[in-house]
Length: 155
Image (cartoon, rainbow, N blue to C red; front, side, top):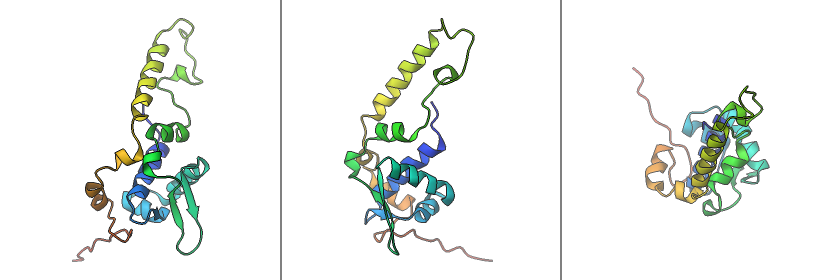
């Protein structure tokens, strides 16, 4: 199964928020850290907010933050909440196939998808960020929750 970029980015956003020192960040900070489109991440943040996974904070010091602790955010639950159509093969969705009425392959893929989700259900966001010491520098986070900028020599 291949998840959509929307789901991938939602998980990345949650990881960033779990790692930020004060538990909040702006969409711009997250976009910069991952080198992703701010516009696309705004849509992701809206989805996460609608699903009750993040809260938005208005004002000059605003941004987004996790709605609950990382230990309470289950990876499988996030994927189910964000992924629009969880199909492995076309016939599991709205697609048509001539042999669909007698095909057993659909059942095999349904079982595989169920196993995939069972594994994701074993993990929380806290499990995913358990190596925070390795992740924080990769995202350019410092103790003040600011994205570090790199100085580039101009020749």
